Length: 117
Length: 106
Image 1 (tube, rainbow over the protein chains, first blue to last red):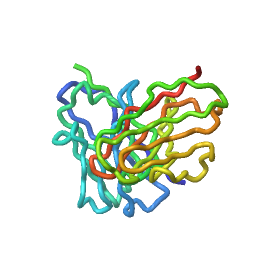
Image 2: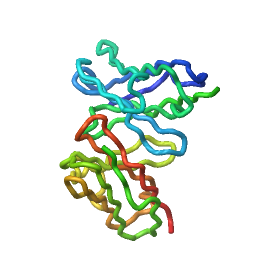
Image 3: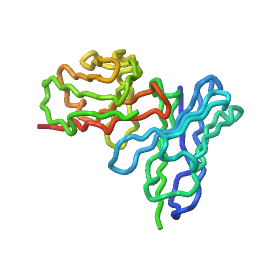
Image 4: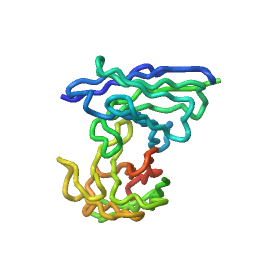
């Protein structure tokens, strides 16, 4: 059974940092791109970033470029999202999903990040 | 690449046929997916590559289009179909979602 479990969310002050984790199981992690997608409360989905199998390619949404860093550890079957310089509009549920973007079939349940001053 | 969905929102009744359109700001070939999301849940992939039905998805759902204009149709609405629907392009990174279409009861 494919599982993706996000963690690391919480309440953070404006300007602070967080590292989100997504731990996976049930598939060969090192053969798949991985992605992060977020959803602000009551709003739509926003694609955030993705990372290639061997970490040689990474892409970011314009809104997070320079503040967010996606990484992965294939030995731990995990993908991470380092978020720096948090702003109020970064408040969202952050989902990890399997794949580069050509059809996200597997998603985690998400982790909530709340940014407050 | 910007994706614009219409209408938003959309009111309909059980048994209705509904269509949602997704307009891309540039040619994305057929690199488009459609998702359904219900409150408190992660999105569910329904259609990939513009017109291919994901395994296990009812045949009442369909998608078509290429280039910049895409359509998503539910041929006969069931009670469980009332949800929010999103298109998503993967032609060019950064990938993007449409703003969503909330389908609610008329």
